[in-house]
Image 1 (spheres, rainbow, N blue to C red):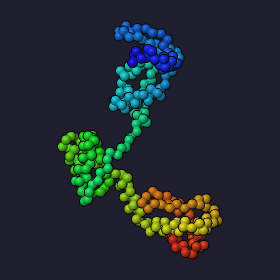
Image 2 (cartoon, one colour):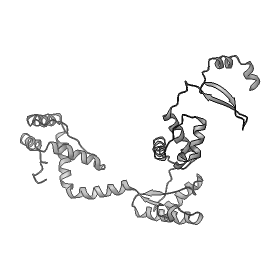
Image 3 (cartoon, rainbow, N blue to C red):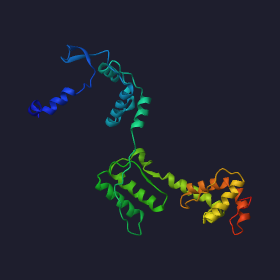
Image 4 (cartoon, rainbow, N blue to C red):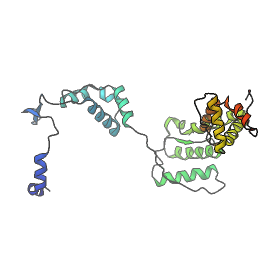
Length: 276
């Protein structure tokens, strides 16, 4: 490679046009203790504090250094020796920078078919087999699952297996993390059952109005007469409670329009009562 570079014309041309990436030296001395050349920073040197903070954050993440390292006196002295313009970075700032640079990643390792009856023991065996194939069975910190009974048994079984080969963090208290989204979904659905009949009437009423262009036009005329700005109804997806919330929010804006529409459409049978 060295012989080639000496005779390589494209390399020589590139080297001639290449700009210097380092600080332009104003003077060069020899360090008497280590015998290394000492380069003094010239007056035109530019110090970018943001770039330095980004580099420090990457170094902390890649080498898994504690955040307090950046406040260590010897660390600061070393950095100032490398660059006198270095500004000390505090641990709070370093932590914030690391969170900006760190992105949680998600990977699907495997899909596995678990034949019926799919007991908790069977699920645990399949999960452990997958972890063994990837050689990460000793790196699992937590397992998140919904509240199904067989999942509880599966996680309990996995916890027993892992406890035999290594010590679990926090005594295993954090090993089983219940899925907050699933719990929240159960809570919301339980609450929606209290007004299930009202939701069904709103849903069917919107379907009735949107069934034809003529019905939509009649409803639009009523809305225009009542000077309601919003002129579009929203139909939910029954399996997604967040869309049900949006449907009800839009319907509330038209609560005065539905009775007016019923006067023009005698077959409209989904009119809510005042109490509803």
